Image (tube, rainbow, N blue to C red; front, side, top):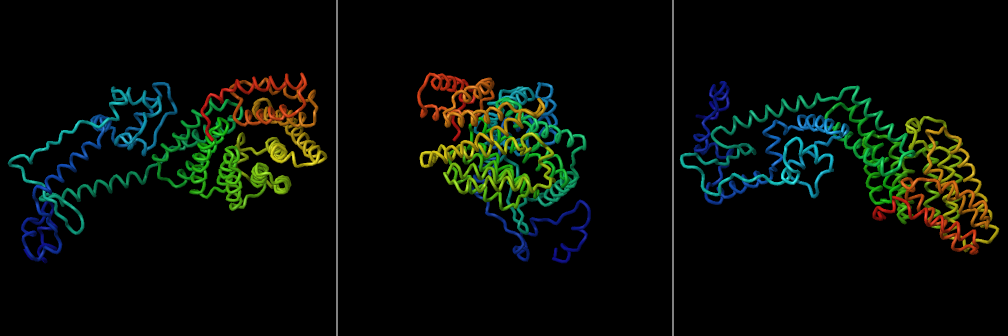
Length: 514
């Protein structure tokens, strides 16, 4: 057979016919196209070792999923979601990447308890057994007698097995093309997308009203659902919406981690939110995520990192309310560094940005956590000035201390009045408590223990599961100020109540996160 016959003859083009690879391999003219590996003990040993490794990479879960036709992610995802709904976990879902890690046993710890329950119910095996390597059935001995050895042949850069390797390669390639065509047309229903949007927005609007330890599991489940649904569509508009919702959910998780005192984890979630927002060019979310990174940094005692994060937020050129929030957080960061001039300048810049706001920020439409309203902005101002006094107060003249304290009272009174004027279903007791603690601290600095006690009485009504890390942090500052004041029966009584109230916080049961 010459080259013309092989390239153009009927033996190549006729259906069901392929050239005789063994004859071609013996022909010197074709040795430039083929590379036949020398078959010996070393090659056989490597082949057996490779087969054994592939077998050992398969878990019991992989074997059972294969037997039940659940290896494809879409098939498993539907069965997993349906089983979860029947078991009482209607929002439970996992991503394609997580499914592959389970199949390969690439996990260091067991999945979440809800996921374990669903897997064990689906496959009737304990989770430890499911994630274990399945027993290998590969023999260590030589190939079976009468069976031709599998010879690795390299054809134009691709490894195939003779004599049917080429045909099998073409069949596999065609199968992959069919799967790729089907996958390219994947999309989610409009109702599913609308429901997910509503669920994420509801979490954002209600977060400030709920105890963070109650809200966090819901946030994790919804974020995981968003990621799982990303595997179910290839439509660019739907993928963009899902990245946006993932960014929103990640920001909420960062907020919850700060409230629970886990600032390191908060930074991880905020960075993930920024990456998702950057992928789709969503500037408001990218700015918000950078602000969360700055907030996490100064809460963890790293104000320089907070300034860096704010500088990066400013690179997105925020305007209006977004800019007001960035400047407000900058004031907090500079106050932790004790820089009076930059703290005051940042507060002034925030006020100017709010005054210049012309609307149009779609995050404001979400509301809840993403509504940077005057209440939280005024609280930010009072927090910055109070922190500045606590860092550098001993260097200030008494007149300067009184001036700063008067401004703190002005901001807290405005913030508290605006907070209490909100509808009942929008009032956050946690936000009001932080404002009340700062107002109490300002009264203590001025020596007005009567007003301090009256203000603190409202704060002491806050339930233990809402005494978040920011609440406890401010209580510590109040406690320190009470220790410094003249010890009277009134001061000692107030300090005792503050200490008892602080120690009853459920957040204190968590390990420190900074």
